[in-house]
Length: 391
Image (cartoon, rainbow, N blue to C red; front, side, top):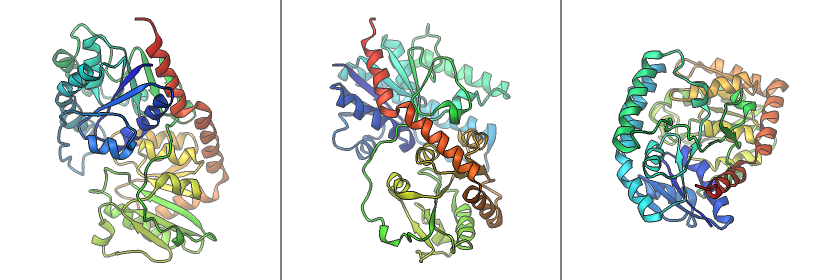
């Protein structure tokens, strides 16, 4: 029996993939613990059998100006959230290691404290890559930003890692688990273990009106994930109008956690458009969705493609433009501009993914590859192997 410490940021999309892997490790007889600035979030997502959740300090997410895009938005993410988060988490992660005494640390790719503390203490660590965007080197065409980031990571290692270390904290030299496959990511990378999405059942709030769904029409799900409620009002409004015009063939389920459609004068729902603050997304996809309109968040995209559902992607920031490009390049969807798209353009994109069999065929091909990769079980097997390696 081995002991695994998962170090995760307080972000739903980064915790969910780890939940399935942790459950697989427990099923193999191993012990699991967590280090996270938000223990309640981990407990809610992982359930009562999650194992101990050891708290560590977090960093507030800076109020990012809505107009920031591209390199400026990426630099803001690093400077005002990811790097301060690592510094804040490090003491708590070290205390968690000393308390739990893990054999392996599993560090989310954006929880650098896990990687660097493990490096400093001489522990093997694995990278949990919940997005494949980093494998494309998004800073390849931005040498000044890349050099700035290299210096900042060096400073961070001096502060919380092993100053003599050389590994990039985003890519463990021991094991990198990528929750995707080359069929979507567009190629392989040395040292990366492509395990496919970790899609496992998870607790979902009761109360979704399943009886509202009309079995005689298709369903289009519109979601912008859990972190974009502040910028999504206009886009959701446009999608609502576009899909209402197609009510003879599809019904729309729109996820609106911030109540922004009400602010636009559209309150509640009717027989053609269902507006809800949250959905049991996996259960809804399993039941049958004909298309997903989303922000190209890695989890949303992978969950849709796992269920062989084509997409309309409207990336907003961070890794989303890269993931959107992967979807389009793989033939599994159509891209629209988040900030400027019109109802006519959204409607045309939805029509394309619904009517062009090529998009559904590509989604089916990727979904098949995802399932063959093994998901959470394959990731747990590789972690088991890492724990057994002689030191």
